[in-house]
Image 1 (cartoon, rainbow, N blue to C red):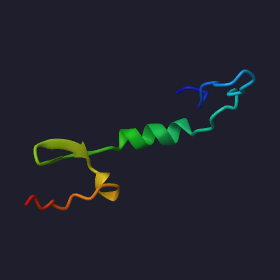
Image 2: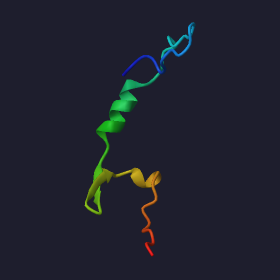
Image 3: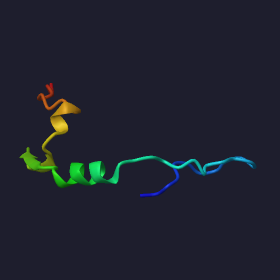
Image 4: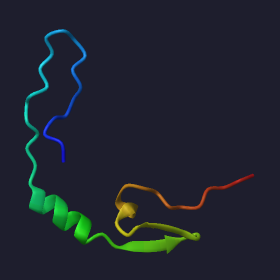
Length: 59
């Protein structure tokens, strides 16, 4: 992972502020991802907490 979170846009811009993150927490998250098949698409198993999978009416 990169230690910067931005690109300098101005003349005296400072992006040397380090991003703090827990490498073990990130690794464990991606290690525990499971997948499900929904309408012939492979999706993240926990995606229902962010997406609404109710059918859409197409009139």
